[in-house]
Length: 46
Image 1 (cartoon, rainbow, N blue to C red):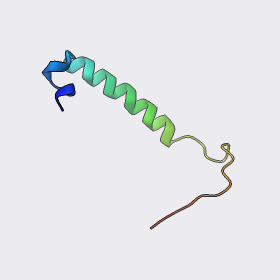
Image 2: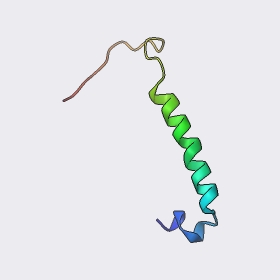
Image 3: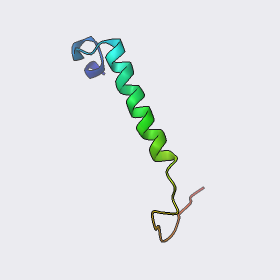
């Protein structure tokens, strides 16, 4: 956790901006269309 603390040299606003950018990338990945990827099967485990 020290890497994300004061010792990292990142300000709160820089850290927040980085997290926002990552959130956009994650949402893009999660909302991508799967039918174009050509998966042979989908495995579900409950």
